[in-house]
Length: 437
Image 1: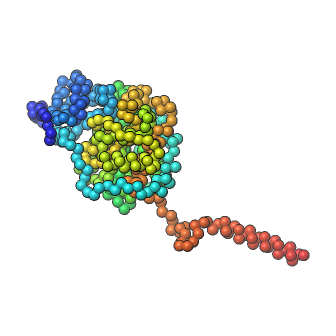
Image 2: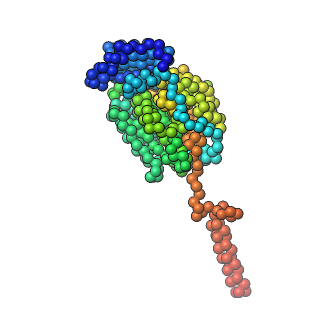
Image 3: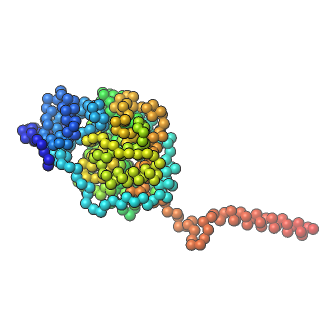
């Protein structure tokens, strides 16, 4: 562990404090470049402590009541959504000081593009109107704050919407409880031949603005746009009937804005259970085009191999321009998966410095994107291609009772039957005339 300093007294106090005091405090990590920002944001928190730090990351103990102020300070001064991680234990927080855990042992991922016929068959199923409708509904809520009634309602609404996409008994949708009103939502399409290998596409469901549970936080771009994008990908795939060889999961994470709490819980659980996650794609803000290129691949706290794969997918299937950028420590849920040793990527809507300045305010509405979803559709096309190629999805098989045999025509016999009937009728009429003549 590359520690510059450890405040042993503070750690000892944290470990020996009585349970009631611990219950009111949180252990978090922030980027070392944001340590002064965190200290200022938590100025009223007399228990603020720096427990440990290295040149990249600092471990802090703060009061939970300081979370909202910390979130806003991270956004205002560093442009990060979240910008910090909430940890379940001191050991976990200190572990974050080390370099990110390497991807799980096993063979390297095969990133060859082998299913262009499947991708091109499914892409026309993406409907901009459906994507727009989802953003409109989610941003029409007062807010989707993780502790608010509407934040909880957003979870159940999305669960029900995802369930409406198919009647398949093997496709499941569940709510994941993290201990606060809003829950994460997970849709699972089980794999066929490689079901124990998992591909994940996610985004965060919550929104935030000053005022907490009573705030006006439509969050149309941050991150109703990402949730709507992955929702439309799931709908298009299920409507097309594709069957992935690897298990495919869609995740709407709770409480990203206050420390990546939903995604960290899920990623930690997957690591503990040894779930074989092949890749993770994060969709956080997809509908505001603020830069000269369409898609920006976040290069820090992500997997370089999977990022290169995304670039090839864009070139092959999206027809968009793209480049690399950086967003800093814990800027979105991809960092939770990277933290726990999984390959993760985040394509972003703009160069980070050019991103939507209305987020975290009541002005984050569809008006910022001219009330259309043209930009988000590019991300839907990318995520669809990612799901099909990485999960190795196949088109539905033709029913054996109607599949033509070797050497036979694939045309329907009905036109030939109709022609035969017509010919027989004509012959009958002509025969009658000849007999009469």
